Picture 1 (cartoon, helix red, strand yellow):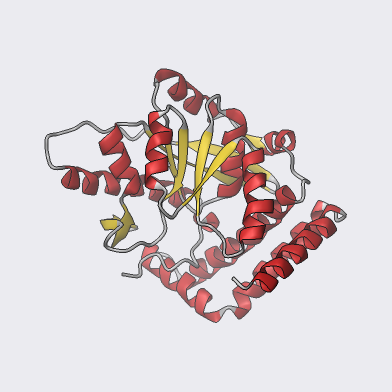
Picture 2 (cartoon, rainbow, N blue to C red):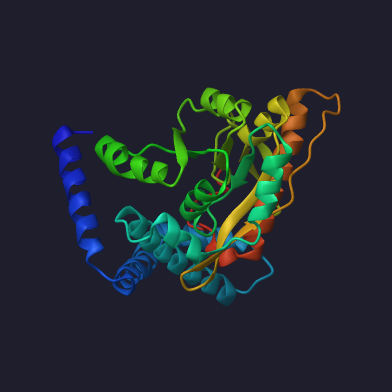
Length: 298
């Protein structure tokens, strides 16, 4: 990125965060939800992708139901932006975050942590508030967690604002490019890793899988790690249950045992099981998934 542009964006971001610190939460929510509604209305190509995805995933529903889910999904996206902004500007602290979340499923993770010397691989998708999910588990787990993120184009914003914020909740950050060796070391050392696995991928990083009844390419990295390292794998999400209220949802661990087949064959089967778990979570809260993402593009 051009250095002048990089610094300009950085100082504008700092100024915006300073302004947000002076605004009440209701104003921040109102601005972000209005932005999301406008985006739904004006971003025609994204709206078309959203509706195409909903028709693929829920062919049994009417067009009216598809439009309802789409509107709610964009509104949820606006609320998530508002909450991320409030975390960035310090309006949601570690202690404040705990009051927003029903953590009744947290003992499942803590019991699994106590039962193994290996790190837990926590898989999730772009469902609910995945940023708050990382922050909350980072605060609550005994061992340190590591989250995988795609690095932004502006290094100043990443290095001075976003990464320090993510680490302030107890997590470490690994950027996606060339992340696998670091992930392996982290899990072998007994620390936890969180991965978003529901994005589209290519034939080098993915394998064919059925997702919502349709074939697509699915990320195989979580399955590969489970087969090679035999680490416990759990799927979960942080879902909205009321305005400004969330619930941590943790499914049962995804079990695996070496059946003697080749690694590649077992990875394909396990990838399907991992994505089936994510689909289960999405079907419980379809209005909170990122339908605007072109998930079934081959």
